[in-house]
Length: 138
Image (tube, rainbow, N blue to C red):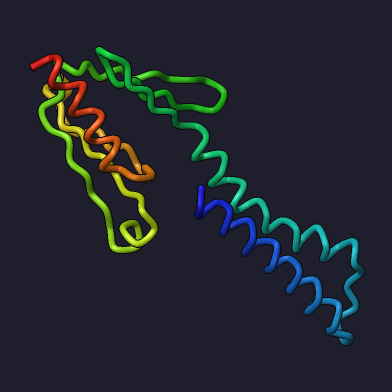
């Protein structure tokens, strides 16, 4: 959520700067009702990431991890805790500085593979929570 707030703030500042710059340029006569919506369209960029972030929901129950995603049509993926083999926390340098990262879950399903829970605040806490629930199954 931090990056979304920063994105909105940057878009507002950018819209104000574009409005001021286009208003100051006198040799190009652009009416305000043209450049103001153009400048405000910068808000669509953080709005896209905000919407994208809100389209994914992670839920840990006593028997499974649910990953629910989608905007209009929703898809729910269930990973049984009994199938989880490993939980890893991964964070880049910027993620570590800001206190978030990815929780990587290796499972033994037939599809196989790895599931990544992206950009989780305090990822070690959630990895520990998953591991604590795993102890009930193993």
